[in-house]
Amino acid sequence: MIFNVAEYIRLSREDGDKAESDSIGNQRKLIADYLKDKDDFVLYDTYIDDGFTGTNFNRPSFKRMLADIEAGNVNCVIVKDLSRFGRDYIDTGKYLERYFPDNEVRFISITDNIDSMKQAYDMLLPIKNIFNEQYARDISKKVHASMKTKQRAGEFIGAFASYGYKKSPADKNKLVIDEYAAEVVRKIFSLYIEGYGKTRIAAMLNEDGIVCPSEYKKINGDNYRNSNRLESTSYWTYSTINRILQNEMYIGNMVQNKKSQRMRGKSKAQDKKDWIVVKGTHEAIINEETWNKVQDLLKRRTRSLDLNSNISIFAGFLKCGNCGRSLVKKIGASGHNGRIINYYCGTYVRSGRQYCTPNTIPHFVLEKIILEDLNAIIQGIDNMREIIEQSQSTTATVKRINETEKNRLSAELEKVRKLKKAVYEDYRSELISKDEFVTYRQDYLKKEELLEKQLESIVKQQNEAKLNIFDNPWIKRLIELKTVEKLDRDIVVEMIHEITVYENHKIKITYTFSNELETFFQESIRQ
Image (tube, rainbow, N blue to C red; front, side, top):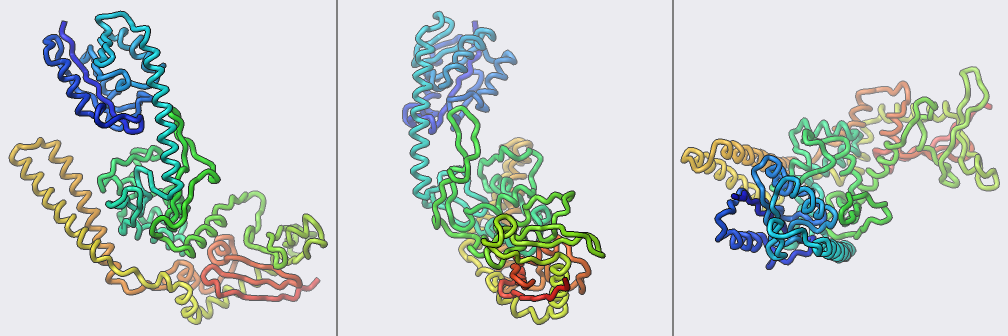
């Protein structure tokens, strides 16, 4: 009988495999030596899972081998030893005791002297499987302990750096800035501060032809796969922008241990208190001031509003001038204009006058004051120019061009263009097939396009001396409005940072567009 052989090879550093004895080359050589003098064995194919753990059977080449078995192409499986096949006792036994016999597949483990055709099922085999699984568990614990030690030392141990960074060529546990992607990150933070929403920012990046983080990593040669992303999604989305805006890595802090994984289980998100955060481990892309401002805006904008409960447009913005607690809304008796809404200090409402004063103010008075002040700002918009430019001086000047990075990109672009030309010549010379030519050419075209955009970004930075402050959306909106006739939630969220209320209807308004622009008002109210 002729046996169509599948030689199965597996290697995983995470399993504690020794590179010398269990290397891909060593396993292949051992199986080749075993088959050398056996005329009844014909090698059908080699199935290699490099970098896949033996604690489960969710491996691409192993699945391909099973498909060939079920198609009738393979009727013999040979491995170096049982641990190469699998370290899970239950699943390994299922394949050896049931699946292979049911499909009339001969199984050979060379160093374990196992041959399902020559002898009955080895009673010691389950014991060997148990030892293999226990060994994997022990190694897994040691690997996790080592990883935690590195994390606490601020060393980067992830497979892929956060978008905007890359692993240092000199030290894979250190991160350095990827200037092209970092500029996109800065743009995202800047747009959000200027007033654009996350969905709109994603749309703008897609309109500009900027590839999303997962595609960017692929184009740069990383074997990256986002398990949370649909295969058809190759563009910027709301969730991607949201993750970037909340990623503390961008202020130079190393954030790791955000997920945990048992040996055969799925990874689970860790509570934030269990994250390992080490400050100042790498160069920041976003400064602390920008970061804090964005986090404050995120808290305000993610407030879940129940539109059916008539929540105030000022919810979350009113603070007591004495205790600093939020003001609460109370609906009073009806007046000639309908029911009257008043705001009171929350401490006063909950605990009484002995802890704080009411610091109350009616809704219609507060709305009137802010409307009048915003309209006054619109009228004197030109007088704000100096204040605005001072408050945004950190973003008024673009960073100086990195000449070394520019030269590197130019050299890389030239190299890609040569490779693109060479692959066409190989196709013409019939050294490669048409399908291979099309695949290679597409890869080089994508790489070329990305490099050109990176160079264009650097040149743009060099040519732009400063930004036009009055391109900010909120200023454009004020200029276009000319007069704000009605105050709404959108205007409050985008324009106002905080409203502090004191006794006797005295308030202080702090606007988002300048921390220095704080306006005090006092209004006499007819009782």
